Image (cartoon, rainbow, N blue to C red):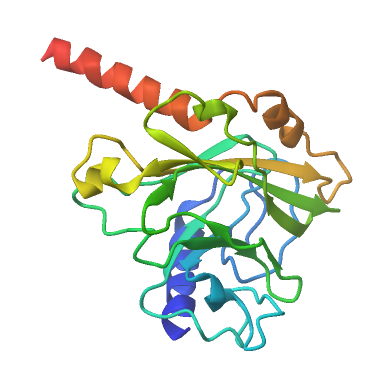
Length: 245
């Protein structure tokens, strides 16, 4: 827990010195602090990776936020990622698991993740599976729901398996999620980039009571994958540079 809080403090200090963009009036940079935001502000939240049981109390009936001081089960196998997107912008978050310089392995952290933010008004998503012994899920949609600019809820939106239907690289888990066989991933000696991609959207209202609309835009684009579009663009640019040099 001390390691987690230290990471949050260091990240907040770094953001304080680097995020001074015009239009961003939110000066709260820690994922474990409360804030109210407007459209265009930055908003800091975290994603913790750990075993599913690590997010619950001893009776397994109460789910704590990773910021809760009573939540002491996160250990050295846990991982933390912190992001600061702009409110109401459709955003693609990526976590590199494929390059030789990346030490992050979702399967080594026991395969589940929880998105979270806030202290007194702590919000957290339900745990969602990222990896098990045989599969890795690489594409997610996370919706942040605000009321009057304060985060109320985070929830994962599952779109089924239509996007990977007929693709031999994927397996449909529980008729809900497209997963890749672990042996196909680059970090397991395969050819597939199994980096995580999280499509982010916002719903509700900001502190000025203005409606947040990016969720509706994501819903209209649900047949597409931002991560797939990003990967295609990256591959296209890499191919062009290879031809030049």
